[in-house]
Image (cartoon, rainbow, N blue to C red; front, side, top):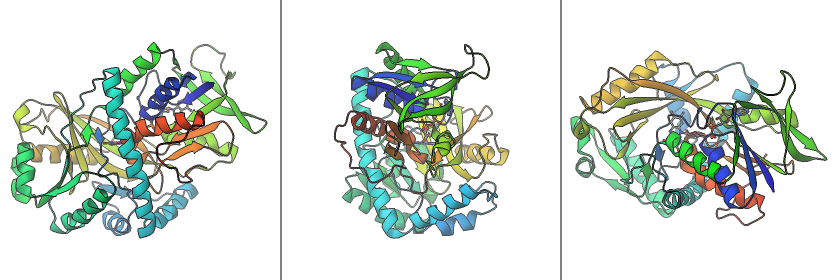
Length: 422
Ligand SMILES: Cc1cc2nc3c(=O)[nH]c(=O)nc-3n(C[C@H](O)[C@H](O)[C@H](O)COP(=O)(O)OP(=O)(O)OC[C@H]3O[C@@H](n4cnc5c(N)ncnc54)[C@H](O)[C@@H]3O)c2cc1C
């Protein structure tokens, strides 16, 4: 079968790999001049199964209200006169109900566990090396109340098959001595030995190389304009190539199936077809520093619960990422948020890095109200959705790609699907 994958972020490229492995003729269309140039470019790097919990939970509305208007808040909601944003907000509140949170957590953890296993397999089979670190993820707390809540979450996650252990501050320090400068403030931690980290951009580039070696075609600098629907079936896409076709004349790429992996851009492409996806851009920031004293930099991937930021080490670079801004689609850098990342990193790991040369970046997470992605065939035959992975796109990419490949081949999926499809 001919399959067109739209978007070459980590989700699209991983999906292309699994589709090719299933024997299809695969073509990937991407508007940038390479893979993983948008949200998959400089994320936090965590393969975080044991914290694959949705943002929508019973405590979330209170926290969002408390942070309203604070420019350096971990989660900042910028209200706009935008119907889609408000509709998303209402849906988010519904997902904060305890039963919805529990169901969403189950869904996410099942997919994340499967995804992590596939990623390990893929790495071994294809000899991929993307600065992955298999030392687990350590999530540390500085507030007693938050740590008590986390202990309950850890117990729940264990019932779902995760290896999340609540440990003392002393144990956390012995696992990651680089935390010594804030030792006195840490009240406890969670440790997930099976979780890992790695550079999603490097992974995607290497996997794209393997795809090319297996005859997957890539059309870069090519923007998908609209989908071609004939007899209620998706049969291709009209695209604009920056070089090639005359301006204003789209090229038609014919195919038997299309998988939409366009991240935050997916809703705009599908809206004219009457498919309304609830995906909003949740802007996040990262900063990458060169390490100058390896012993002072963390080796284990970390999550700082107080600031809601994560740290991952990629060889001689340290990446810190996090914060959420809901509202707007721009990726311009807000100096207050950048500085908050730099300041906290230097506070935690003084003299570990060259803090005078931060490389700041912002990206837009494609976020659904439940945090659960849209995965599966849409109500238009031949049009599959693989989008809306929000905070967990790197964690869930392998599982989502394999799942779509199984659906296209009409094979059973390893993870049961709720109705996530529009
Ligand atoms: C600050 C930050 C930290 C994060 N940390 C983590 C983490 O630690 N762990 C984790 O699991 N996840 C993390 N994430 C989330 C993760 O990065 C995303 O979920 C993931 O990158 C989404 O991948 P994607 O392929 O769906 O989207 P993208 O990477 O955005 O890919 C979509 C692609 O579609 C292309 N495109 C769009 N429209 C068109 C069009 N019309 N025609 C052609 N091409 C088009 C774009 O150019 C883009 O390349 C983080 C995100 C951010 C912002």
